[in-house]
Length: 184
Image (tube, rainbow, N blue to C red):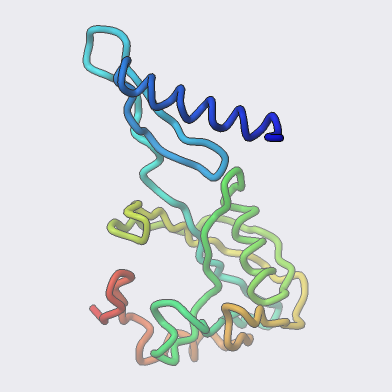
């Protein structure tokens, strides 16, 4: 015997198919728990906004009491083959603010607890994975702990580094194309 959820899913699938044929529903977007179809009823040009076109991420500029900066080397990603030490980075989760995302990313990648200080800059980019544009916020954070515990699924190494050493890295200003991994 089929359960109510299975019957509902079959009924919904049939209804959506029928509505698309009869009414002209069009695909808008999908999320893990739903598919959004839309149909503009008024006899005017549609004003339904497109689905989200951007993703947001953070770069965490973390200083300790000695004035050193927290840096990581990626296990995977566009900079993994360059020996580059970089600041912890990551995407902001749905429903999460910039401050919370920056603090979380640092904690996940390095085990360092931090306090958000301020956003010090941002940049936008286009043609990133999933066809989205990217807003990247550079955040300054103050360390509240010093013992590094590396996230071993994404980060190959992490350490505190003098700012002069960080800034003098030969590949620091080298950009890598996210799509094809070639240097620019």
